[in-house]
Amino acid sequence: MGRPQRNQQVRRELLDTGMQLLSEQGYHGTGIKEVLDRVQVPKGSFYHYFDSKEAFTAEIITDYIEGLLKLMDTQLARSTSGPRETIRHLYSLMITEFERRGCIRGCLLGNLAAEIGASSQRCQKALQDAYRNWLRRFLPLIEAGQQQGEFRDDLDATLLADLFWNHWEGGILRMKMEGHAHGLRRNLDVLLDELMAPAGK
Amino acid sequence: MGRPQRNQQVRRELLDTGMQLLSEQGYHGTGIKEVLDRVQVPKGSFYHYFDSKEAFTAEIITDYIEGLLKLMDTQLARSTSGPRETIRHLYSLMITEFERRGCIRGCLLGNLAAEIGASSQRCQKALQDAYRNWLRRFLPLIEAGQQQGEFRDDLDATLLADLFWNHWEGGILRMKMEGHAHGLRRNLDVLLDELMAPAGK
Image 1 (tube, chains in turn yellow, cyan):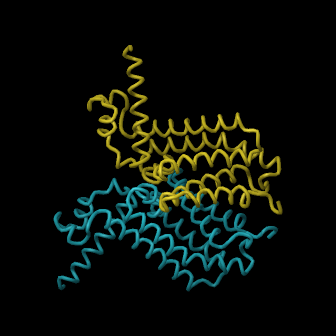
Image 2 (cartoon, chains in turn brown, cyan):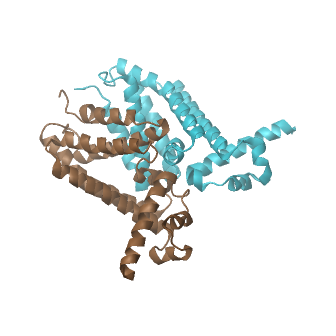
Image 3 (cartoon, chains in turn purple, cyan):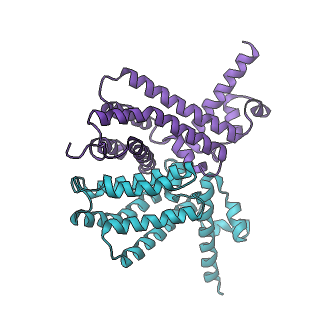
Protein backbone atom coordinates (compact mmCIF):
# COMPACT_ATOMS: atom_id res chain seq x y z
CA MET A 1 0.00 0.00 0.00
CA GLY A 2 1.42 3.41 -0.99
CA ARG A 3 2.19 6.03 1.61
CA PRO A 4 -0.63 8.50 0.81
CA GLN A 5 -3.16 5.68 0.96
CA ARG A 6 -1.71 4.42 4.24
CA ASN A 7 -1.86 7.98 5.60
CA GLN A 8 -5.50 8.22 4.63
CA GLN A 9 -6.23 4.97 6.40
CA VAL A 10 -4.48 6.03 9.61
CA ARG A 11 -6.27 9.38 9.50
CA ARG A 12 -9.60 7.56 9.16
CA GLU A 13 -8.78 5.25 12.07
CA LEU A 14 -7.79 8.18 14.27
CA LEU A 15 -11.08 9.94 13.52
CA ASP A 16 -13.17 6.81 14.16
CA THR A 17 -11.40 6.00 17.43
CA GLY A 18 -11.58 9.66 18.48
CA MET A 19 -15.30 9.70 17.80
CA GLN A 20 -15.84 6.63 19.94
CA LEU A 21 -13.76 7.92 22.86
CA LEU A 22 -15.20 11.46 22.71
CA SER A 23 -18.71 9.98 22.74
CA GLU A 24 -17.98 7.91 25.81
CA GLN A 25 -15.56 10.08 27.79
CA GLY A 26 -16.03 13.62 26.55
CA TYR A 27 -13.43 16.12 25.37
CA HIS A 28 -11.45 16.58 28.54
CA GLY A 29 -11.72 12.92 29.45
CA THR A 30 -10.16 11.83 26.14
CA GLY A 31 -6.40 12.05 25.80
CA ILE A 32 -4.71 12.15 22.41
CA LYS A 33 -2.28 9.53 23.75
CA GLU A 34 -5.18 7.12 24.32
CA VAL A 35 -6.38 7.62 20.73
CA LEU A 36 -2.88 7.05 19.35
CA ASP A 37 -2.32 3.97 21.52
CA ARG A 38 -5.55 2.38 20.29
CA VAL A 39 -4.69 2.98 16.65
CA GLN A 40 -1.08 1.96 17.39
CA VAL A 41 0.41 5.10 15.93
CA PRO A 42 3.61 6.58 17.41
CA LYS A 43 3.08 9.47 19.76
CA GLY A 44 4.82 12.10 17.67
CA SER A 45 2.77 11.60 14.53
CA PHE A 46 -0.57 13.06 15.66
CA TYR A 47 0.42 16.53 14.47
CA HIS A 48 1.25 15.08 11.08
CA TYR A 49 -2.51 14.52 10.71
CA PHE A 50 -4.14 17.29 12.77
CA ASP A 51 -3.13 20.76 13.98
CA SER A 52 -4.44 20.32 17.51
CA LYS A 53 -6.85 18.34 19.68
CA GLU A 54 -9.38 21.10 18.99
CA ALA A 55 -8.98 20.76 15.19
CA PHE A 56 -9.22 16.98 15.54
CA THR A 57 -12.47 17.33 17.52
CA ALA A 58 -13.93 19.85 15.06
CA GLU A 59 -13.28 17.37 12.25
CA ILE A 60 -14.94 14.59 14.24
CA ILE A 61 -18.01 16.80 14.71
CA THR A 62 -18.19 17.31 10.94
CA ASP A 63 -17.72 13.58 10.36
CA TYR A 64 -20.40 12.70 12.89
CA ILE A 65 -23.04 14.92 11.30
CA GLU A 66 -22.12 13.65 7.83
CA GLY A 67 -22.73 10.08 9.01
CA LEU A 68 -26.07 11.12 10.46
CA LEU A 69 -27.08 12.91 7.26
CA LYS A 70 -26.18 9.85 5.19
CA LEU A 71 -28.46 7.79 7.44
CA MET A 72 -31.20 10.39 6.94
CA ASP A 73 -30.74 10.32 3.15
CA THR A 74 -30.89 6.52 3.04
CA GLN A 75 -34.07 6.49 5.11
CA LEU A 76 -35.64 9.28 3.09
CA ALA A 77 -34.89 7.48 -0.17
CA ARG A 78 -36.42 4.26 1.18
CA SER A 79 -39.42 5.75 2.93
CA THR A 80 -42.86 5.21 1.50
CA SER A 81 -44.63 6.89 4.44
CA GLY A 82 -45.47 10.50 5.06
CA PRO A 83 -43.07 12.98 6.72
CA ARG A 84 -44.28 12.33 10.27
CA GLU A 85 -43.78 8.55 10.05
CA THR A 86 -40.46 9.02 8.29
CA ILE A 87 -39.22 11.19 11.17
CA ARG A 88 -40.57 8.73 13.75
CA HIS A 89 -38.86 5.81 12.04
CA LEU A 90 -35.54 7.65 11.69
CA TYR A 91 -35.38 8.77 15.32
CA SER A 92 -36.65 5.40 16.58
CA LEU A 93 -33.69 3.84 14.80
CA MET A 94 -31.38 6.18 16.70
CA ILE A 95 -33.02 5.30 20.01
CA THR A 96 -32.57 1.61 19.24
CA GLU A 97 -28.90 2.30 18.53
CA PHE A 98 -28.56 4.18 21.87
CA GLU A 99 -30.17 1.23 23.66
CA ARG A 100 -27.88 -1.24 21.93
CA ARG A 101 -24.96 0.59 23.52
CA GLY A 102 -26.56 0.71 26.97
CA CYS A 103 -27.76 4.34 26.75
CA ILE A 104 -24.24 5.53 27.47
CA ARG A 105 -23.15 7.54 24.46
CA GLY A 106 -25.99 9.84 23.52
CA CYS A 107 -25.47 12.42 20.81
CA LEU A 108 -21.90 13.57 20.25
CA LEU A 109 -23.10 17.05 19.22
CA GLY A 110 -25.09 17.53 22.42
CA ASN A 111 -22.28 16.15 24.58
CA LEU A 112 -19.69 18.44 23.06
CA ALA A 113 -22.06 21.42 23.07
CA ALA A 114 -22.49 20.91 26.83
CA GLU A 115 -18.82 20.42 27.52
CA ILE A 116 -16.95 22.77 25.18
CA GLY A 117 -19.64 24.43 23.04
CA ALA A 118 -18.94 27.78 24.63
CA SER A 119 -15.22 27.47 25.31
CA SER A 120 -13.72 26.28 22.01
CA GLN A 121 -14.37 28.66 19.12
CA ARG A 122 -13.34 26.10 16.54
CA CYS A 123 -15.65 23.42 17.92
CA GLN A 124 -18.44 25.95 18.39
CA LYS A 125 -18.19 26.82 14.70
CA ALA A 126 -18.22 23.11 13.75
CA LEU A 127 -21.31 22.58 15.95
CA GLN A 128 -23.11 25.52 14.34
CA ASP A 129 -22.32 24.15 10.87
CA ALA A 130 -23.50 20.70 11.95
CA TYR A 131 -26.81 22.14 13.14
CA ARG A 132 -27.29 24.04 9.88
CA ASN A 133 -26.55 20.93 7.84
CA TRP A 134 -29.02 18.91 9.88
CA LEU A 135 -31.64 21.65 9.46
CA ARG A 136 -31.16 21.60 5.68
CA ARG A 137 -32.29 17.95 5.63
CA PHE A 138 -34.87 18.15 8.39
CA LEU A 139 -36.70 21.34 7.42
CA PRO A 140 -38.17 19.99 4.14
CA LEU A 141 -39.69 17.12 6.15
CA ILE A 142 -41.42 19.58 8.46
CA GLU A 143 -42.59 21.74 5.57
CA ALA A 144 -43.96 18.70 3.72
CA GLY A 145 -45.68 17.59 6.94
CA GLN A 146 -47.30 21.00 7.26
CA GLN A 147 -48.48 20.91 3.65
CA GLN A 148 -49.94 17.45 4.14
CA GLY A 149 -51.72 18.48 7.36
CA GLU A 150 -49.61 16.26 9.60
CA PHE A 151 -47.96 19.14 11.46
CA ARG A 152 -49.38 22.41 12.74
CA ASP A 153 -48.80 25.37 10.43
CA ASP A 154 -49.51 28.17 12.89
CA LEU A 155 -45.80 28.01 13.82
CA ASP A 156 -42.99 28.51 11.35
CA ALA A 157 -41.37 25.28 10.08
CA THR A 158 -37.90 26.51 11.16
CA LEU A 159 -39.23 27.08 14.66
CA LEU A 160 -40.79 23.59 14.79
CA ALA A 161 -37.47 22.07 13.64
CA ASP A 162 -35.67 24.10 16.28
CA LEU A 163 -38.06 22.89 18.98
CA PHE A 164 -37.67 19.30 17.79
CA TRP A 165 -33.87 19.50 18.08
CA ASN A 166 -33.93 21.02 21.58
CA HIS A 167 -36.44 18.47 22.67
CA TRP A 168 -34.47 15.57 21.32
CA GLU A 169 -31.17 16.69 22.83
CA GLY A 170 -32.75 17.43 26.23
CA GLY A 171 -34.38 14.00 26.08
CA ILE A 172 -30.99 12.39 25.46
CA LEU A 173 -29.60 14.07 28.59
CA ARG A 174 -32.50 12.54 30.52
CA MET A 175 -31.78 9.15 28.96
CA LYS A 176 -28.21 9.33 30.25
CA MET A 177 -29.44 10.41 33.69
CA GLU A 178 -32.08 7.68 33.87
CA GLY A 179 -30.03 4.90 32.29
CA HIS A 180 -32.81 3.95 29.88
CA ALA A 181 -34.57 5.41 26.85
CA HIS A 182 -38.24 4.86 27.77
CA GLY A 183 -38.88 8.57 28.21
CA LEU A 184 -37.04 9.47 25.01
CA ARG A 185 -39.19 7.04 23.04
CA ARG A 186 -42.43 8.22 24.62
CA ASN A 187 -41.54 11.90 24.18
CA LEU A 188 -40.77 11.38 20.49
CA ASP A 189 -44.36 10.21 20.05
CA VAL A 190 -45.81 13.02 22.18
CA LEU A 191 -43.83 15.54 20.19
CA LEU A 192 -44.88 14.21 16.79
CA ASP A 193 -48.47 13.30 17.68
CA GLU A 194 -49.43 16.08 20.09
CA LEU A 195 -47.17 19.12 20.33
CA MET A 196 -46.39 19.37 16.62
CA ALA A 197 -49.86 18.22 15.50
CA PRO A 198 -52.42 20.65 14.04
CA ALA A 199 -54.99 21.91 16.54
CA GLY A 200 -58.08 19.66 16.66
CA LYS A 201 -56.31 16.98 14.60
CA MET B 1 -12.90 30.52 65.04
CA GLY B 2 -13.15 26.95 66.34
CA ARG B 3 -11.96 24.03 64.27
CA PRO B 4 -15.37 22.51 63.41
CA GLN B 5 -16.59 25.90 62.25
CA ARG B 6 -13.43 26.46 60.22
CA ASN B 7 -13.87 23.00 58.69
CA GLN B 8 -17.42 23.86 57.73
CA GLN B 9 -16.25 27.06 56.09
CA VAL B 10 -13.51 25.32 54.07
CA ARG B 11 -15.98 22.63 53.03
CA ARG B 12 -18.38 25.33 51.83
CA GLU B 13 -15.61 27.10 49.89
CA LEU B 14 -14.53 23.84 48.26
CA LEU B 15 -18.12 23.15 47.17
CA ASP B 16 -18.64 26.69 45.81
CA THR B 17 -15.34 26.71 43.92
CA GLY B 18 -16.00 23.19 42.64
CA MET B 19 -19.42 24.27 41.40
CA GLN B 20 -17.94 27.19 39.52
CA LEU B 21 -15.16 25.14 37.91
CA LEU B 22 -17.41 22.17 37.06
CA SER B 23 -19.87 24.59 35.42
CA GLU B 24 -17.17 26.12 33.27
CA GLN B 25 -14.83 23.21 32.58
CA GLY B 26 -16.83 20.05 33.15
CA TYR B 27 -15.96 17.01 35.26
CA HIS B 28 -12.90 15.77 33.44
CA GLY B 29 -11.65 19.29 32.80
CA THR B 30 -11.68 20.13 36.51
CA GLY B 31 -8.82 18.87 38.62
CA ILE B 32 -9.11 18.57 42.40
CA LYS B 33 -5.72 20.29 42.63
CA GLU B 34 -7.14 23.37 40.91
CA VAL B 35 -10.04 23.50 43.38
CA LEU B 36 -7.68 23.16 46.35
CA ASP B 37 -5.29 25.80 44.97
CA ARG B 38 -8.11 28.31 44.58
CA VAL B 39 -9.36 27.77 48.12
CA GLN B 40 -5.72 27.67 49.31
CA VAL B 41 -6.10 24.38 51.07
CA PRO B 42 -3.14 21.93 51.28
CA LYS B 43 -3.23 19.14 48.72
CA GLY B 44 -3.56 16.30 51.21
CA SER B 45 -6.66 17.59 52.96
CA PHE B 46 -9.27 17.04 50.23
CA TYR B 47 -10.03 13.53 51.47
CA HIS B 48 -10.61 14.94 54.92
CA TYR B 49 -13.72 16.58 53.45
CA PHE B 50 -14.83 14.22 50.65
CA ASP B 51 -14.40 10.52 49.84
CA SER B 52 -13.60 11.04 46.18
CA LYS B 53 -13.97 13.45 43.25
CA GLU B 54 -17.17 11.59 42.41
CA ALA B 55 -18.61 12.09 45.92
CA PHE B 56 -17.57 15.75 45.78
CA THR B 57 -19.37 16.18 42.44
CA ALA B 58 -22.49 14.38 43.66
CA GLU B 59 -22.64 16.76 46.62
CA ILE B 60 -22.24 19.75 44.30
CA ILE B 61 -25.17 18.47 42.20
CA THR B 62 -27.32 18.33 45.35
CA ASP B 63 -26.16 21.79 46.37
CA TYR B 64 -26.86 23.21 42.93
CA ILE B 65 -30.45 21.96 42.84
CA GLU B 66 -31.05 23.18 46.40
CA GLY B 67 -29.95 26.67 45.35
CA LEU B 68 -32.28 26.52 42.37
CA LEU B 69 -35.19 25.33 44.51
CA LYS B 70 -34.60 28.18 46.97
CA LEU B 71 -34.78 30.61 44.06
CA MET B 72 -38.01 28.94 42.94
CA ASP B 73 -39.48 29.16 46.46
CA THR B 74 -38.59 32.86 46.76
CA GLN B 75 -40.17 33.61 43.41
CA LEU B 76 -43.25 31.55 44.18
CA ALA B 77 -43.74 33.30 47.51
CA ARG B 78 -43.42 36.72 45.84
CA SER B 79 -45.44 36.00 42.74
CA THR B 80 -48.82 37.61 42.32
CA SER B 81 -49.32 36.29 38.77
CA GLY B 82 -50.75 33.02 37.56
CA PRO B 83 -48.64 29.85 37.13
CA ARG B 84 -47.70 30.54 33.51
CA GLU B 85 -46.33 34.02 34.21
CA THR B 86 -44.58 32.77 37.35
CA ILE B 87 -42.76 30.12 35.28
CA ARG B 88 -41.93 32.67 32.58
CA HIS B 89 -40.52 35.10 35.12
CA LEU B 90 -38.47 32.43 36.90
CA TYR B 91 -36.88 31.04 33.75
CA SER B 92 -36.35 34.51 32.30
CA LEU B 93 -34.34 35.32 35.41
CA MET B 94 -32.18 32.28 34.72
CA ILE B 95 -31.66 33.33 31.11
CA THR B 96 -30.62 36.79 32.29
CA GLU B 97 -28.14 35.14 34.64
CA PHE B 98 -26.76 33.00 31.77
CA GLU B 99 -26.37 36.14 29.67
CA ARG B 100 -24.63 37.98 32.49
CA ARG B 101 -21.96 35.27 32.41
CA GLY B 102 -21.62 35.35 28.62
CA CYS B 103 -23.74 32.24 27.93
CA ILE B 104 -20.83 30.04 28.94
CA ARG B 105 -21.97 28.05 31.93
CA GLY B 106 -25.42 26.71 31.17
CA CYS B 107 -27.07 24.30 33.59
CA LEU B 108 -24.72 22.24 35.73
CA LEU B 109 -27.19 19.33 35.78
CA GLY B 110 -27.39 19.21 31.98
CA ASN B 111 -23.63 19.57 31.60
CA LEU B 112 -22.90 16.75 34.02
CA ALA B 113 -25.69 14.58 32.61
CA ALA B 114 -24.05 14.90 29.18
CA GLU B 115 -20.54 14.25 30.42
CA ILE B 116 -20.82 11.66 33.19
CA GLY B 117 -24.57 11.00 33.60
CA ALA B 118 -24.16 7.48 32.31
CA SER B 119 -20.66 6.67 33.57
CA SER B 120 -20.71 7.63 37.24
CA GLN B 121 -23.34 5.75 39.25
CA ARG B 122 -23.03 8.11 42.20
CA CYS B 123 -23.51 11.23 40.08
CA GLN B 124 -26.29 9.57 38.09
CA LYS B 125 -28.15 8.93 41.36
CA ALA B 126 -27.60 12.58 42.45
CA LEU B 127 -28.90 13.80 39.06
CA GLN B 128 -32.01 11.61 39.35
CA ASP B 129 -32.68 12.95 42.85
CA ALA B 130 -32.15 16.51 41.62
CA TYR B 131 -34.69 15.98 38.84
CA ARG B 132 -37.22 14.55 41.28
CA ASN B 133 -36.75 17.46 43.67
CA TRP B 134 -37.19 19.95 40.83
CA LEU B 135 -40.32 18.11 39.70
CA ARG B 136 -41.77 18.30 43.21
CA ARG B 137 -41.70 22.13 42.97
CA PHE B 138 -42.54 22.45 39.30
CA LEU B 139 -45.42 19.99 39.01
CA PRO B 140 -47.86 21.96 41.23
CA LEU B 141 -47.31 24.97 38.96
CA ILE B 142 -48.30 22.94 35.91
CA GLU B 143 -51.30 21.43 37.69
CA ALA B 144 -52.46 24.86 38.85
CA GLY B 145 -51.98 26.17 35.29
CA GLN B 146 -54.13 23.34 33.96
CA GLN B 147 -56.85 24.04 36.51
CA GLN B 148 -56.82 27.73 35.63
CA GLY B 149 -57.00 27.00 31.91
CA GLU B 150 -53.52 28.35 31.15
CA PHE B 151 -52.08 24.98 30.12
CA ARG B 152 -53.55 22.15 28.07
CA ASP B 153 -55.03 19.35 30.15
CA ASP B 154 -55.22 16.68 27.45
CA LEU B 155 -51.66 15.72 28.47
CA ASP B 156 -50.71 14.62 31.95
CA ALA B 157 -49.07 17.35 34.11
CA THR B 158 -46.03 15.12 34.76
CA LEU B 159 -45.58 14.68 31.03
CA LEU B 160 -45.80 18.44 30.44
CA ALA B 161 -43.21 19.05 33.17
CA ASP B 162 -41.00 16.39 31.60
CA LEU B 163 -41.30 18.02 28.18
CA PHE B 164 -40.54 21.42 29.69
CA TRP B 165 -37.32 20.15 31.29
CA ASN B 166 -36.09 18.45 28.11
CA HIS B 167 -36.89 21.50 26.13
CA TRP B 168 -35.11 23.83 28.49
CA GLU B 169 -31.98 21.69 28.71
CA GLY B 170 -31.82 21.19 24.93
CA GLY B 171 -32.26 24.93 24.52
CA ILE B 172 -29.32 25.56 26.84
CA LEU B 173 -27.12 23.32 24.68
CA ARG B 174 -28.13 25.45 21.70
CA MET B 175 -27.33 28.61 23.67
CA LYS B 176 -23.81 27.32 24.27
CA MET B 177 -23.43 26.38 20.61
CA GLU B 178 -24.74 29.71 19.38
CA GLY B 179 -23.04 31.91 21.95
CA HIS B 180 -26.25 33.79 22.75
CA ALA B 181 -29.59 33.14 24.42
CA HIS B 182 -32.01 34.63 21.85
CA GLY B 183 -33.38 31.21 20.87
CA LEU B 184 -33.68 30.09 24.48
CA ARG B 185 -35.74 33.19 25.32
CA ARG B 186 -37.97 32.84 22.25
CA ASN B 187 -38.50 29.12 22.81
CA LEU B 188 -39.52 29.67 26.42
CA ASP B 189 -42.36 31.85 25.14
CA VAL B 190 -43.31 29.40 22.37
CA LEU B 191 -43.35 26.58 24.86
CA LEU B 192 -45.53 28.41 27.40
CA ASP B 193 -47.80 30.24 24.94
CA GLU B 194 -48.18 27.67 22.16
CA LEU B 195 -47.06 24.10 22.83
CA MET B 196 -48.32 23.93 26.40
CA ALA B 197 -51.40 26.08 25.76
CA PRO B 198 -54.90 24.60 25.58
CA ALA B 199 -56.16 23.95 22.04
CA GLY B 200 -57.99 26.94 20.59
CA LYS B 201 -56.80 29.16 23.45
